Length: 475
Image (cartoon, rainbow, N blue to C red; front, side):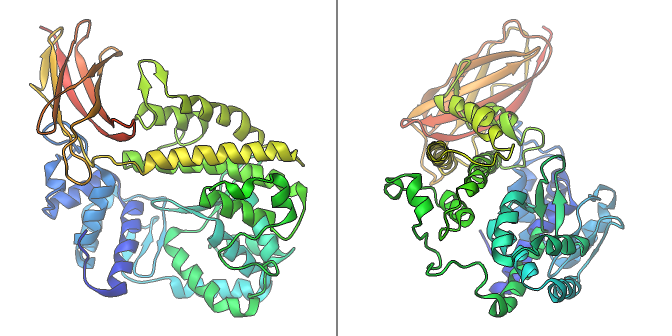
């Protein structure tokens, strides 16, 4: 992808602008800006986001293109032009931009000096504890498209390890200063969040503080970047070292166990972390798969799993989903749900089985998320309007990421006909990457029909998918 300008400064500004655009504008407004800038990709779609074949645009691709094309002057002009469409719930405090959602005002200036003064004030009062909370957050956080978050239970344990018993007061001070925000509520404290655009500043500040707190929380003899053995880890299983574990699972488990110790009570925290990690990884993989954000309540638990099946991240044959679906369903209903109750201790064998199952699921999710798939499958029909009962011919041209033709595998068109009729049709390969088939519209009623096409290669690995819309009318 083309770079704008040269050097780190330009790249930093573009990365920050990507976050800013996501926080300020809805997707269709971004598309409108791209169309106004005469971007070739954005011009393929109308103001509602559909192209000539009724395929919907990819929001993330539009945002990335706009972020690289815009100048700061143009950005200010579009903020004024689309003032009525600006979002009012996300503040932005970047190195290059500041956005006030209450006043809907964007300025080409930075609040970082003020934030840095607040950070120093908290450190002056809470010392090592403030360093510990911020360092723990940076280590454990999950970054999303427009925000970052950290599980409270993990933050609690690691902050105490790094900053001592005063960590909780330091966290409250950071919340009062507006640097850390609380997410979630109820019996569990939920997550904590630091604005994604502020993370580089936090990392810089920690770097300047680390000389004073360099010894904090580092187990004696531990080599940076390695996972040292401990009695507790060894007791979990004599064969643990023989498994090629998911790296993030190891990292998070190791951080909690404090591998120099043997506190079996910590295993409860391990259970919570590993089970929540599976859900977070699935959510991230599916959102990347559909190239968009998963909206609540479909972003958690069983509803997330059903959404993954709906968009064909998890395949189905008729009404029967793949076996991995049932393992994930059991995991969300039994394993993951159990560990929200903060049991004081778990049997080692129970923890071992949970680690192995979590590792298996994480690898399966990663396998699907990183598999080869086309960026886009254009769907066409012989016409855009059909009479009830009239056969519908579906055609699509499929190319892989490397540009080569998709010629062998299973291609299925699923058509949702009004009033809720679903029909599947296996498309046949014609030539030059083109697949086609006929779907019957018998029993359909007037309304809108949606077409989804998925492609699976000969090894069963997912290749891609897209959707299109046609209309059904009375004869």
